Length: 149
Image (cartoon, rainbow, N blue to C red; front, side, top):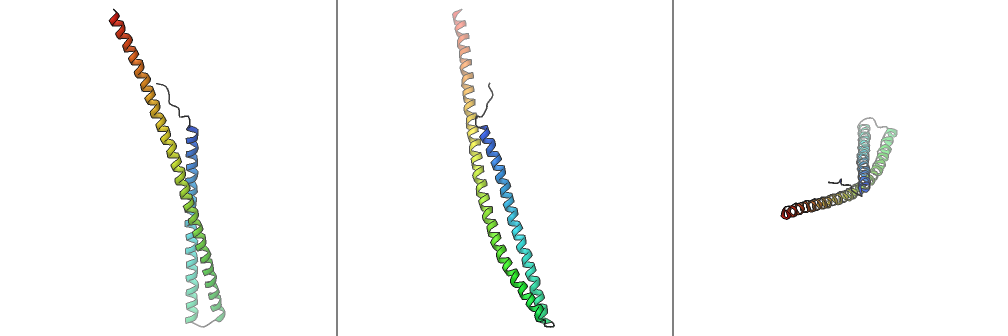
């Protein structure tokens, strides 16, 4: 039996490499979304701190300068939170694109693997047919030799 060699193995190897790159890109996109969400949580905590300080100032001795400082801080954090929400949406969009790319690359790789399986099955059928033909010829030769004696 001869050895099976898949003629498009180099393409299949490239598909594996592309899939690994897509998996890495997907993992990076997931990490980016998590990072952006963490930044938003930090901003929420900072806002809560400003609000707490604002309430303390209102309940204690009124210091207009501190009060204005807290209000400005709250507004700045609100703006930063809005920007961070946009950053999260962008990161999630990039994540979705990476997911779609990964699915596409995986599908292409699976298609080439199926082609390789099909080529191997055809190879095995040809080998079996050749072997069967060789056995038939040997049997015919031996039968003809025995009949001729």
